[in-house]
Length: 233
Image (cartoon, rainbow, N blue to C red; front, side):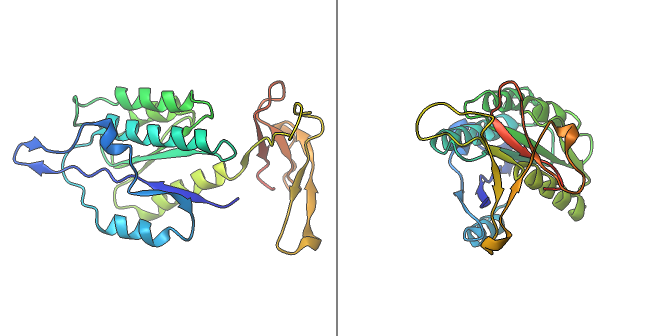
């Protein structure tokens, strides 16, 4: 799987006692760096990070709403890809309607209910951010990753965890004609050296994953939508 990445910078400027950052969802729906293949887009990501300044409030609802709109459209245009949002913030919602994450929760839920589904992972940097768990739950990922401000390695670990989770999920390929026969799906691991090519066994359910040999299983045996790989695989 080739990793792809998109970034939307949320920059808000404080002026005196008031905020001048946008509260419009549309202003956050266009990414600074569009989804593209890594590592080719790496420099563009570094450049936009270097040029960004973050001052002022935390417009969680419009930022999440903009990300959701972009991600849902991209998912619809690329149904063969897994699309997800990483919502990273260093504070509670404190702009565009007051201190509440309710709006962000609803936006995450909308993306999760979209077809194709878009999950939202949440990373909170700082203290007293437990309300962000509600955004993660609405986005289908359980709870937020909460890390201390200034702690670089926990943040890297959180991002790595998100990446490894998503890389183990695959859309079920559609046949050129007819319906999918779920008893005839095979998972084949291909390497640069074709002599290393191997089949991965279907273990049925997650609990049957072999700790050494791995395997794969359907997300829902009765109504499969995705192929999930065991940790060892």
